[in-house]
Amino acid sequence: MLKPGDTLVIASHNSGKIKEIREMLAAFSLNLVSARDLNIAEPEETGTTFVENSVLKATSIMEACQLPCLADDSGLCVEALNGAPGVYSARWAERANGERDFNYAFAKIFDSLDRSQSYSAQMRCVLTLSFPQGAIHSFDGIVNGHISLPPRGEHAFGYDPIFTPEGYNQTFAQMDPSLKSQISHRRHAFKQLVKFIS
Ligand code: IMP
Image (cartoon, rainbow, N blue to C red; front, side, top):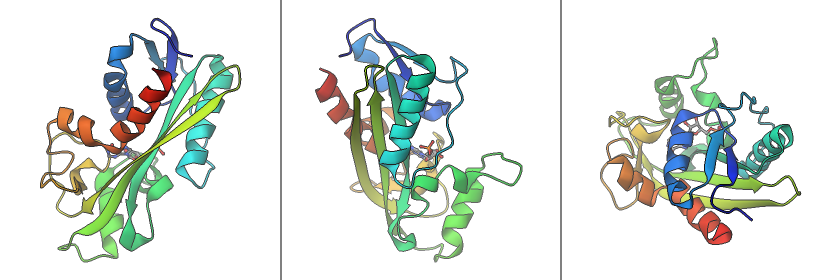
């Protein structure tokens, strides 16, 4: 399926995701390149679920480069907002000029909530492997926790400064990145992927 030395394309332009995925696959001696390295644009995310968008990104980039591809579709789901921003997590951070500003997304989330409270939420990640021979496999990872303001932490990636996982009192952005990496939604999805490719 995938053996040491094989090329695997990370179907993303998101530096935070690419960094975490590289670290999680470091032990496999794969030749990891990203869609950004190959100048392949990400497709428009027209799906309404994490699985649909993950499969869409993995297959569209695989078709463009004819190499095995790994996509990650992920985001924050807030219970009090019926699962929003969910698959629209990236779009909630986009200002009218197209720039991503997560403080803007945090304000949108808390505008209809009491800013002094904490609210149940999940981080979710669906990884999809897509191969030129046609096989497609998805792996779903979830971490439960809560969101609260103000944003806390230096290791800022996306919604990390407002998300505290269950059983901890630091946000993902306050934790040492190696701790986040052991307990995150992405790690849960990766555990299944690693079992599959090992
Ligand atoms: P997409 O998967 O490209 O649609 O984007 C997912 C959005 O969720 C991005 O805006 C990310 O910043 C955010 N996101 C994904 N994973 C994480 C994470 O581990 N921590 C914080 N935010 C994340």
